[in-house]
Length: 285
Image 1: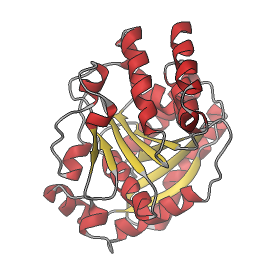
Image 2: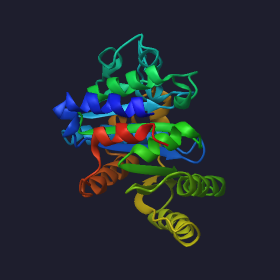
Image 3: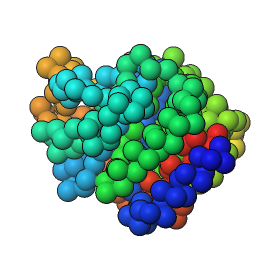
């Protein structure tokens, strides 16, 4: 770990852009699969892109990567090729027709924790190539594992996606509880999105339930970022392998995502953020 820290210091000393980076890192996670996490991640990235931001969407589901499916893209290379030093970040970073860049995930790859020290140092070095991005959105695996916790702990903002279904609410609380016990909360901003709501009131009720329990029993502040309406446009977009904010930009779901990004944009940059600090924290757990 000391060698890794030294390697990162050397990289940052030789890269003023990285050292001064104010890239915003947002990790999107969920307590269970099937709540629309990847759809939210993808369309948040596109909404940021529409604001003129330089956006990188990283599929960090190292087991069942599928961001490229939502985008309707077949990547030639992915994180597996980068981690195994077969390709560089410049090789795997894909421009898309949606105004964002994609780092495709590595299906079948298991744990960041299993990387050798050489692979970790190379992974960190290659991630520095993203220092020119304004926003990096990381779509983490569904559920809880060490990879997810690492990406949450290192991010400026971590967003938990849930739905009004009782099992989804229970699992959202479950991942928040693990975050509270496993991660040293060094300025982490934890937020909640309630997806597939039938009304504004339903979203608020679910959020109040989760945030109140987190505050009362975990002494953890979780901010309610907002909701996304249940919308047939989302299902249609999934079938057509197009982001719903592109296929149906005037849909209820698209308007909700734009509102979520507007709220995120109002949150000021905090010192201790940026890509350099993300890389410092990524393997420090």
